[in-house]
Length: 305
Image (cartoon, rainbow, N blue to C red):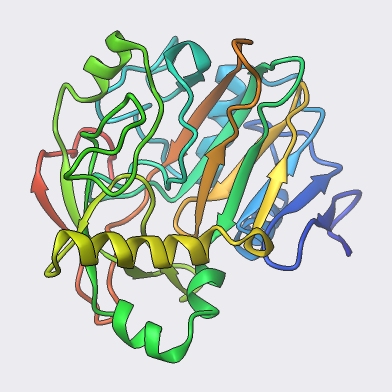
């Protein structure tokens, strides 16, 4: 399915539940407001959009475009940016974050949008998969919706980087570089979020989970794991996902409030490097209107909102 926007801009739907490719756009800080609005509209509808042939962008250009979508955060609450303080290198030399997650959910103000630009790609593999957490919620049986609407989960940035989920964690991620690990956990953050958040722009309900979840509040560790796995399996059903094979000049933009993603580690010891900028978001709110609560750590420096 293809939709014609203004001028030469077109949106090609990639799947029934998630994903679109946008053609006819040259990203940058000088884009007209109408084009930016069209990108945002396609993003809210498709949850993740892809643009090819953006080789003209460098970090400064990526940042200038990001500012048209909102206020960029720092690169990360604990990991320093590169040349620009807002740009985080997603680099295989730091490890492979091959685990389902939503970006930076361990702080109270979860980023609204993420923008990822291909820098150095392996000769094979290295694709990324996204899942629609709003659709995952919408397709739950009513009995499960009644349960999860009132559940809360604790998210933390402290977890086992060796890929072995410890006894206090539900998820795990494979990141082996010790220096990067030390920086990532140099400041501990824990935040209690609703398992179901209300999207501030679309009004949709979406599952807020992923590998930063430490536990579900108010149930035993065994019950916590069972609930988490039940819901995560709903999120990551193949019919609820889209997979993108990166090429030079590619940009992916996703709604971090309604997606999870996974970097596929199928490129052996080849180098893979992409640069990410996140756009500041608000504090998630439950279906009952209750906002998330910080337990440990003050991330006010990360986001200006």
